[in-house]
Image (cartoon, rainbow, N blue to C red; front, side, top):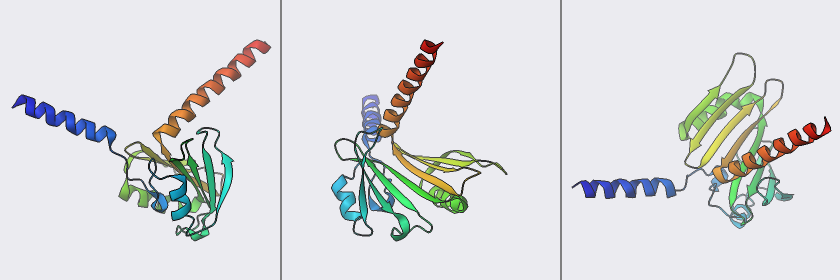
Length: 177
């Protein structure tokens, strides 16, 4: 009996750690969709522009003007891929006034893990679904806000590169003194 329970537990944990999140802005799944799928699905709604290689992922990026993507006020959407052309991030730019409605919509779909909503100041909310983090950031003195869908793979590369950059800056400063 114990071995059956242990086997079931191991299978359940294995399933949970290998399951892909079902985070799919504009119908393209983060961590699953390819460059060609994004070109096909999103490109059927709006024009996509190649904007080069992402500094953190070392993969290509596409950008779309947001007016044709079905989100009120969406100014632009940037799609970030890894070197193997797998979608690892989607960055959205919207008017700051949409914070409450966007947060509410995301809260219906994803688990809220953190929020900071002061009466006056920068507002933010962070959601999670599997390996994907969804962050909403509305700076107080800005007219724009960001909604960023980031796969753990991209976040890890960003964190690693940021730490290396900070270490290099510290070394440069120390060498200068």
